[in-house]
Image (cartoon, rainbow, N blue to C red):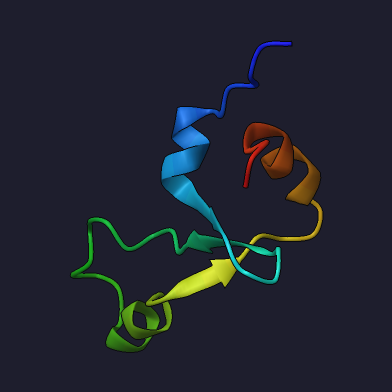
Amino acid sequence: MPKMKTKSGAAKRFKARGSGSIKRSQAFKRHILTKKTTKNKRQLRGSAEIHHTNIDSVRAMLPYA
């Protein structure tokens, strides 16, 4: 059987942790930052975990993660 391909867009957006959970970066922090509060921008730092309703679809896009 041929190898399964990883969706390249998903590979850029998601990474698997050692525990098996998948992390993602926060949205809404790319542009138009002047109208967002400092508290809002600070809380968008770091990474977050994929919601449990999306895990199956993300795992399908990342077969080797």
